Length: 107
Length: 110
Image 1 (cartoon, each protein chain N blue to C red):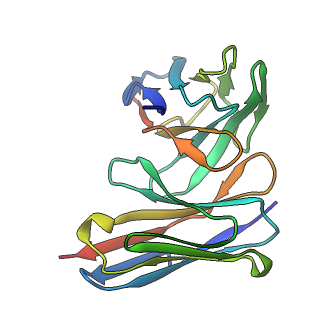
Image 2 (image 1 turned 180 degrees about the vertical axis):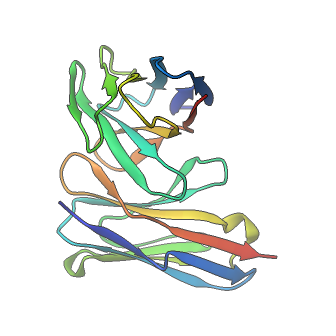
């Protein structure tokens, strides 16, 4: 099956810093989504981005499907950005999740 | 507003008991999914359903059962055969594009 790898596994930032999270996948996918899991466990949809680039405020994402990777950019990080960021890809009927990047933003 | 409702938020189960987790959606989505998350880990697929009255096993279906009698509802039963049920359970739905997740149920065996 499709393998999804995320890097880095852990990231600590000072408030205001920028960061890039990466998601590599091993095969062609139809869909790709980035989620933020907050401290209460809720998975918040950030981007549905099977290809191309999207931006939403301080966050943006780029997926290069032909090279099988996606990047999530966080600019001017805030303490509320802390949590776990998951990339999920869909080969056929189900999503396969990466193991996540655990981000902690320090005040 | 449309969304997915999971209940209860917290559930405690005694050894040998079956418990049922509720998942209801009003998004008119065809597909629904159950995932399990263990502490510090990613999500693993338990069961999924593409249409009413049909469902498929995911990667870790042993010890779990589901039903899909209505489009809006996809309950998950954790049976006594599941030896390590303590985890966070997330339900999701989808129609075409991206997934929408509920807020989850934390199940603890006492």
